[in-house]
Image 1 (cartoon, rainbow, N blue to C red):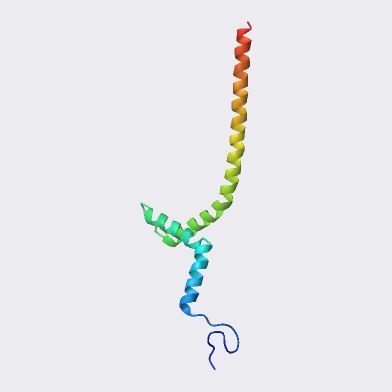
Image 2 (image 1 turned 135 degrees about the vertical axis):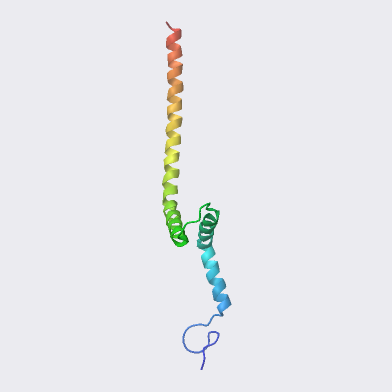
Length: 106
């Protein structure tokens, strides 16, 4: 006897269209569709088409995967550097003020 919608022995049957839709939702939710779209748009916008489009796609995907960790590290470094700039600007302002006071006292 053939397996039908959950009846019979073993496993459940799912219509091919609903399996496709479920898989499409999975790809969309996990960001795969967005990533592939960005890579393909980048390939389309390349003024000089690469000889090997598959290598281009592989390199682009690898670069975007490594960018995720890099972005966080760069954000943290940027925040630290902004704080350092503020600190140095305050030091400069303080030193200018001291220099003006010392010049006025002479």
